[in-house]
Structures are given as C-alpha cells and as structure tokens.
Image (cartoon, rainbow, N blue to C red; front, side):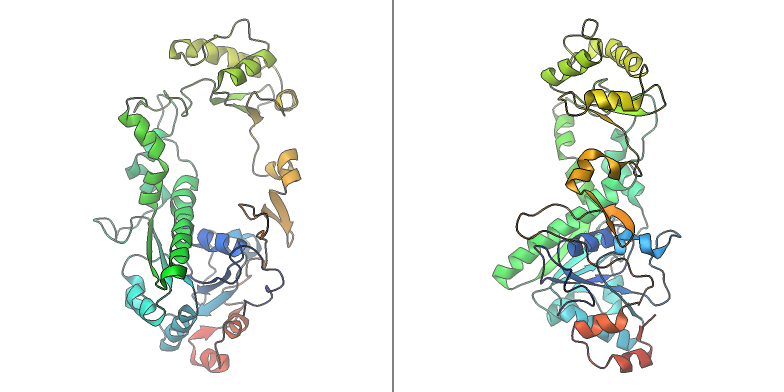
Length: 391
C-alpha cells in the first residue's frame, strides 16, 4: 500500500520503496523530499504541535515537505513509540537527523530497529557525524564549512570568506551524500538480505566534495590566498561583471576557443591578451572586461551571447530563473498546486519521477490515512491514548 492520496500520482525508479522520516530541519527533509520525488513512499513523523518550519512561512510553500504525508506521533508516549516502531518494521529505509544518542534514548536506535527489521537501511544525518570530539555539539552549515577548508576558499582577494548560502554543506555535502549512501546500502541489502547504518556527516560530505581542490593544493597548483585562483574569481575570465543597468553577467570561457569567441563578441579581441591563462595578463584583461560589460544592459548582452560557445550568461534571480527560455523548455521549474518550484531531478528515460502531494498544511494532517495505508490497525485507540494526533 502507498500513502494517502498519492498512489495514482506516485511514479519513479523508487516506486515501491518505503521510507520513514523522523522529522528534522534542512538536509534530512531535503533527502526525504528527493526520495519522494523519485517515487519512494515516504511517511514523515512529526511531533504534535510543531509546524515543522525552520522559519515562519506559509506551510504550502515549505517545499522540503512536499510529496509525503505527515503523521504526528508523541515519541515520549509509549503508544507513540510503539507506532513508530511498527512503521519502521514495515519500511525499507529510515532517515533521522537527531544528535547522536537521541534516537537510542527514544528506543528507535539502530540496534532496536535492525533487530526488528534486519533489512532496514538506517540513514543518519548530522553535521559532525556519529562520533568524534564535536559529535555532541550544536552546529549549522556555516560551522561545518569552516572546519573543512571549504569556507576559507570561497571569496574575493583581500576580502573575508563568503558564505555560499547553505547549498554546499546542508544540501550538497549533507543531503545528497545521505541519499547516495541510502541508495547504495539499499542496493546492497537486496543482494545480502542485511541492512546497515549510513552515517552521513556534513563535514565528511563537504570534504569529499572538495577532492579536486585538495589535490590541486597538494600539487601546489592552488593558492591558499582567496580570490587568486582559477575558479575563485582570481581569473578574470571566470567571474561576474556589472552591466549598464546594474545587472550582472557571468563569464567562464576557460578554453582558448571559447575565450576567443567571448572577446570577439565583446569587440576587444585586438586589445585582449592572447594567452588568457597567463596570470600576468589578468589585471589588464579584468579592466577590459569590466569596461566592455558596463557599456550595455544585461538584456543586450544576453541576446548577444545566448546560444554561443562564449560561456557567458546573465545572472538571474530565483524569481527570474523559471522564465529563462532553456529552463522553461526543459520544465526545470513547474507549477504544482499553485506554487512554482523545481521539478524532480535527475531525469529517467523509462521511470521518470514526479511531484505528488503538496506540503501538508499542518503537522499530523494525515495521521489516520497514512497509518492505515501502512497497515497500522486500531488508529482510534492510538489517537485516544494521546500517542498520536490528527490535526
């Protein structure tokens, strides 16, 4: 059985995979959303009385909660714990993002869950990991980036480190590594018959994302000084430039042939350095690029460069991005239940993912229907006991 109201809509390569999500914030919900987008039947266990929102916002646009119902269980109540254990016993995957030891104290740790369900893939999402001197400390995306070297490397010459939103840590080094680990363990469990614990730590994932840069540092090909290297705005041909109307263009023609096309279309080929990879020429090239781009509007430059090999694109806002011709043609953004949002990714030729249900409007909005869909009987008694709440 699948979760309420989504059976007809649920599709994707993970259709038939059952996931229990113990509600958290940030990377855990993103991972659960991605699994749901790809067809998994995910049930989110929320705490009664919580909104599940990291910041005040309308629940219908809390997109990290899309694609799965909300069951409100009191995990301090014996019946609430027993119900959570019953759901986990029916699941292929569990995702939790508590501090190390919390799930164990609730009676939902790996030992208990894998004893009841030996094929379970137990996914753990934390910033610091399950062990180490800082494993019990609080932290956020910026904290984890700081100690892995990633934060130090991002920023302009002479300036402070720049925070790359929470894309690199929470979602790149965290959620995506959790999903990769869960899927790998799920594949292995199908052949071995045995589940296992996936310890996904943002510090580990972020460090792993930096593998290429770590190699460049070891080879002496990457300076520790911010803003002086090829990909960190040190190179003038890999940077952004302001246009006449206050917009911005992003340039990135690393290869000689692409660089030649860029300077030709900018009408500075006769003055631009022939060897754009020579750092001694970078101050001159930066001045030429800044002067050229300041002479026309962003839309003018967009029209001139779009579809060429010059590797020049307009810097769009999140509000503008869905309207870009390429993204619109691919359906990269879709409108679902009145909200424009990113479509599921990646894409599959035979079993495409799809959006199913919108985010629940309240924690526990689907308690009865979701529990019954997963074969939990006597929901009335559970609700009466206070172990679960239907809102």
